[in-house]
Image (cartoon, rainbow, N blue to C red; front, top):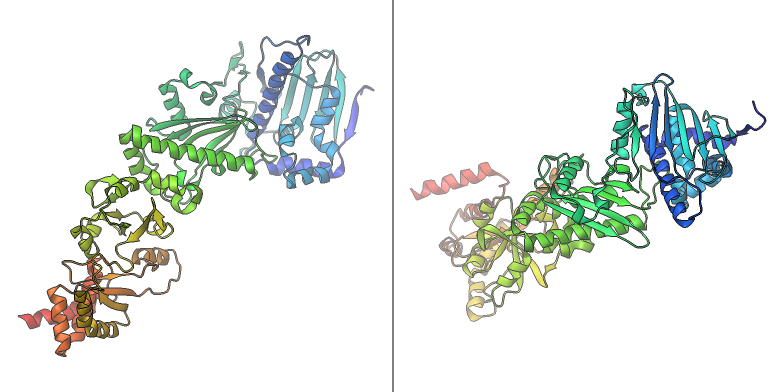
Length: 621
């Protein structure tokens, strides 16, 4: 071996760390090519910048490109660029990062999240991913404007060699002497043109520079990356057809997007986003194991498919890409560090999506109606999860109401239609609109012309309890708490009525004590004899069922039976109680059972109810 060849040893602990990186850090071996192409792209970017800064620099900038050279016989893959290149000292400093730093210092930086951006951007760390697929790696490089080059070579074990090379071309070439194919270990044939092109188009399709691969039958190398990063082009340069094709590519949907959203952030932290609202909900929108999130790029290099950190759960249907100029990733570039940049990006992306939906309400009502019918249930989850954007979510939400049998209403529309003197926004939850419309709870509200929101999604049962008011008005359930639309308790008539029914109410409360917490007079009924309601802060029966279905042991919630003092059945019941008629306890139980059935509830003992009812009917014949 020539005297100019230096053989250097890795530190013992650094050797262990290198093996850890090769075998453990990257979950997908294909990413080695992403790392090498990314390094080559950075080298071309630096060359362009350096040539701009130094007009006297003797460099070739006419045809910047990245070549991928395959040799199936020798089983080698070479990644070659004509970028900025490196001096000998830079090779030692950059590629020797691990050998030079030592394990303790390297791990300390990772644990403290300090230097993550430096490490990821350096040639050394991503470069070592090559040893996942190669037994030996040879690097030849020449710094732009320098006379001579450097060769670096290692098998990724105990040592590496470094020597000068006189005739090296400008830029850097990395030659991988590939390991044998082993599909069980996810080690594929990386000397195959088809495999290499597949990886490039997955991870590096939007790299600015042409990535060229020679055809299998020889001839001039062909550019295999599209270089068409739509989000990096001005909006006037992109056609609707291009947006549609790109959306189909990232979403695997066959329809055009409902709406396209573009966002560009400049300043200390730069990023661009191209997002889409789909026309229809995916089949797995409410499946627990679904994938969600947008595609993440850093400097047009693909990092991950489903970046959950950038989009909240309730916007899981949003598709598209986010391309950051710089981002704190971990060593493998596969997991985001939770830092301020990520949180700032997420907040702005969410605000942009919500404001876009709001603009649809005003400018494209038909598109908004489509969006809400497909994704409204998911969006309302944000009322529980995203307190910061709760008002914005309420602004874009629509609900069924008693005001129109078909059209939905916004909360702003509801408030505009409120009757004079109405203080609350009234709502009712349940399993279906038809069940709610026939509920006795609505009778007095409809009679007075008060509009009631009809909330039938499961998520509605949960968010209404966490939001005390909307648009400055208290949110009030018509089936919970004390509702007094007549406000006549303090009148002489009201006081007299209370006295007349006091004995019956006390007696029925005692008789039904195992089922109800109280029996009282109601002002929410006009035609029905009775209804059951909850206290203001009680769980609804539907919510109670949901918790039990999830395996939670819920204490039994006793409800309140309200009687309509103007109904003939109730007045007859009062008379019968005053006369101490026999079998009156069965009648009280039947009244309670009818009230439960009227709201769509479940009787605790249906067989007993049918038996009591049959006996009563028999006596009337």
